[in-house]
Image (cartoon, rainbow, N blue to C red):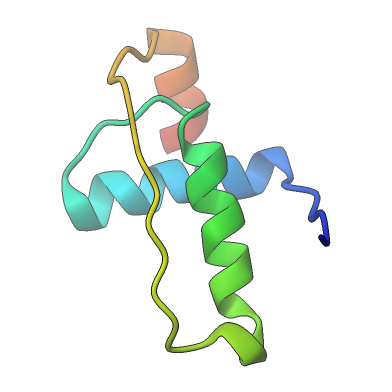
Length: 70
């Protein structure tokens, strides 16, 4: 098993992408899985593969929301 490190900036980007493309407000902690999935799918050997992630929550406080969108 290869472990990838997910940076905070990748979590923020995944949260933005999910909000923009899927119109879902997901908690950034649940977007860690999405960020890891996006990273995995970006590897040439994994392109075209399908992945499933589960998102949860929509409880984002005002400060976190500002950090994500600014």
